[in-house]
Image: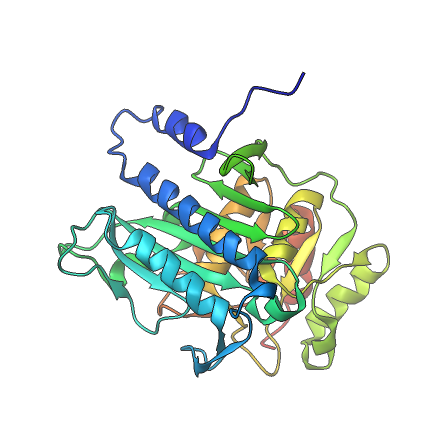
Length: 331
């Protein structure tokens, strides 16, 4: 007999909401809207090889990177799914230089959404797993429509965070501070179904480390010493897509690293919509995330597109990284 006990994302979120009698439903609706956007993006990702949506546009984003066509599409899908619902006070996206206001014709809500619409987009044309990352904060500004203040909050202030990985299957993983749960998209019913309940990082972790060793000549002495130690009894695995690398680390354990170096002394990954949301998930799964000096969740952001070094995964291995990096005065 097939299993008839199916827990969908919508059912799971509603059941979680019932634990909070004061809930207004706005947060639940945000997750529903993000799930819908993820389904639309997944559909286009899955057929990207046979339609004219792969490749680059003629524009660059705020970081000076050429915008992939699918990047642009994913950004618009999320924006169009979220800006009119009355649940958000503003949005922040990797693809936009400034905070995105809610259009004046629409009502606003009590939450701010930050997102990377399509992480790993440089891998689109070679069919490597890519993903969407999101972070949700409660509105803290006094103005009626929200702004930069609502986005520049440390990771510890996050209400929820998650990611969607578009791979051999599409999977949405999220936390709202009560554990980490994963849902796999069942295309036969068009629903995200609970497939990974209460995810925790394996302890002891699998002996895996993940870093782009092509940049080793630019590393600090502490980073070089760290990787040298790990090489003794760990296996290297690196995909080059943040969501995919983190997803493997979350399920298998180990250590993911994107260090600062001589080329990028502030690091490359963005704090607010890449590092902080994944740090929240890592902590909720029993792990840690660090800049190499302090917890990512404790960093006070000062700009929307602020960059940071990132070390995350099994707590013991993040501790090892901090021990090696403690003596570095900089990259």
